[in-house]
Each structure stands twice: as C-alpha cells, then as structure tokens.
Length: 118
Image (cartoon, rainbow, N blue to C red; front, side):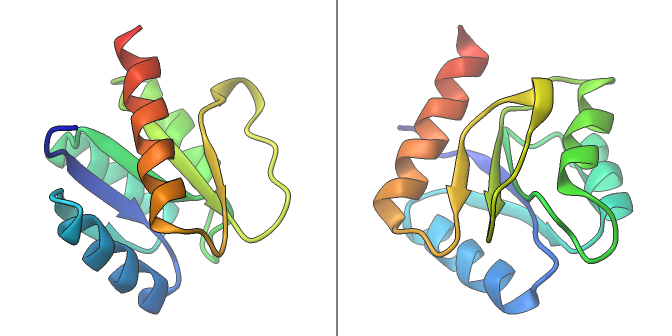
C-alpha cells in the first residue's frame, strides 16, 4: 500500500501519539492529531487527508459526528476506533476495537481505502 496522509482524531493524547508513531513506522504521513469533534471537522476540511482514523466516542463530541460532518463536504475514507461497542449507523467502515494489533490496523486501512475506491 502506498503512503497515505492520515488525520487522527483521538481524545487521549497518549493513544494519539502512539498511533501516530505506529502509522509513521508503517510509512504513512500523519498530517495532524486532534482531540475534539470541532477540531476534527475543521482539520479534515482544511488538510484534506487521504484517510481519517477516528475515535468513535470523544470526551468533547463524537467521532461519528466528525465523519458525518466531513462527508457532507467531501468523502474521506475513515476507520473508527472504540474501546467498546459502537454503532456507526449508515457510515459503516471498519471499526478497530482498542487495544488492537498493527496487523489489524493495516487491514482496516486497506479495507477503508478499497471501499472508497469502489
């Protein structure tokens, strides 16, 4: 898989930092790590990443709402992360259960990108 520009929306700064490092070692470029719904939407629309990896439940807002808002303007592939059950509604897309392995992350990215291309 070629290198992607990825936006991370994760309210836990340690998880965001670790995920960014894993993605960089996988050969991807992390364009930003943001912690709130508002910052997620604004950054996605400004930086136009190739992929968003979004925590479904944020302390300040909802990762699902981030994807919904961005999709009204532009379709960006996404992967949701969650520490518990999550209903993505009509958004679909891969959901990673925390904690996850790098291989699961790679597979979820591939699925999200392939779904966008289809």
